[in-house]
Length: 275
Image 1 (cartoon, helix red, strand yellow):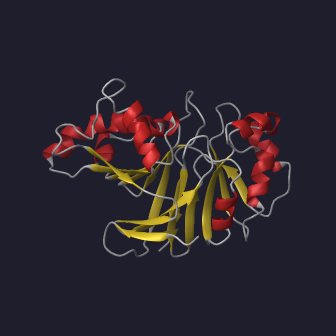
Image 2 (cartoon, helix red, strand yellow):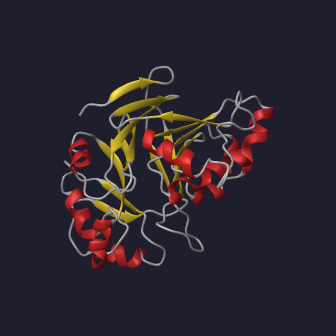
């Protein structure tokens, strides 16, 4: 399936881009932050607890948040960030932060988080005319032009509606699968993409393969099946491992030979796409 291009800004062109890992853990513990990536200085890809490591000035610079799905470990910081930056952005007359997500994900966020019970509705605050957040629906297969960056919305297969994202650069794409179990649609698309770096989840060890299947996550055995579909050796970073399980899961992954370079992702890692 070829992506459809939505022009949200002037035409796409490639440049030097940096992706900073704010969080990549499957849950929380000391030193473990849940999923969030900072693209350049103004785009978040997911908004887990890792967002809390940004300074207030860095948070105020966020203009776009790309959400993979509605689970708490990926969306927890959207409302907290909005609360932190409302005054600064209003004083500077900044536009709303655009939150991109599937329509079903937006519905879940409205009903279960921004409902005035769990958290205030920052799509109506500080007032309905000038809110700090604005939802922007996306669909699988779209390619968004955000500033000078081309970001494709990829298919994912999870327990709730979900997507991944590919940030395209002139020398390949940085691909984040989001939370996904085995996914033929994603494998077919990745076989067509020139991949620079693939960030893919492996949430459980093989001893919990049944649980991984029920919860629509990968384990080392199913990860190998997914990676076999890639057309060329690839730099692969493993994400979403539970705290305390990184060594065990990576040992299982390393026990099988692979043509790919595989290593665990860590908070603070920096990845770049050359222009």
